[in-house]
Length: 328
Image (cartoon, rainbow, N blue to C red; front, side):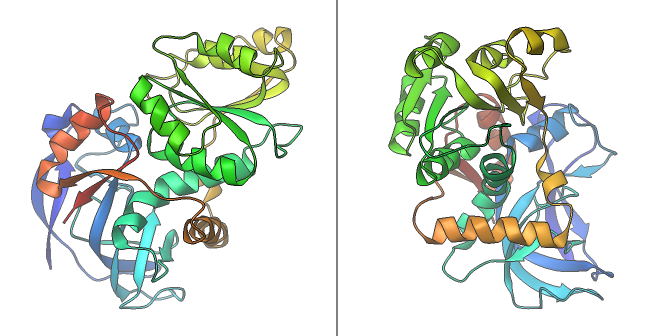
């Protein structure tokens, strides 16, 4: 079987993304073949393309999609041919019409969730799930607590604004423009700070009456790192889960002592999704909050697969909000 797929032959800019025709065979043990209906676009895709996260070449990109299962390999019991399914999964390869892949992280998609929503929400929604439910400060999170969430108008951010509100948390979102701050507030953020015009750490202290917050969720990295530490109260946690502005420089651990016995962690989604059971439990939590209406998945950009280079340019230029999908 033939499939169109997006591939790179070397690390570099968006111009390295090429549409090629690939052969797709039968699934082996523990694998499925899936025909995609929609594909999610994520910042991690740009890291893999640029070489920040290096891979063997050639590389077919893409970490999440939705579609219909066409065939299942030996030992796969949670899926069958004809099932609607969605995933966030390694290895990359979602930028394609059809693929064979490991079945472990693929979940049945409930009938009342559309393919577009399924493709847009898995990686970002499951990321939000492990952050708000599992990546917790030493003192835990209780309703009424303030948290800081950077890039609050992005794909993960807008889901986090809604989910945090549903959990009773007061999310202080940061973003790079007034329009993006307005979007965060519309999606449930309690406060929004434009970090291109305001000192976000000073503003967080003001909002919290000088106390600071228990946890900062930071996907920006280098540019927000020092300010994020200054937002924390004693025993606070800085969870760095991305590098939008570049990787964080080496850390002087003495700073954590002088600022109040602070914690720093660098979690990843796929550590949390290491087993079939953990993947399904996280997905069930995500599906439930989406089906309840408490979290809506904002798809603000759609690009045909052929326009993947432009999609990457817009994502890196911070021109996108919410979730972005590639259509087939």
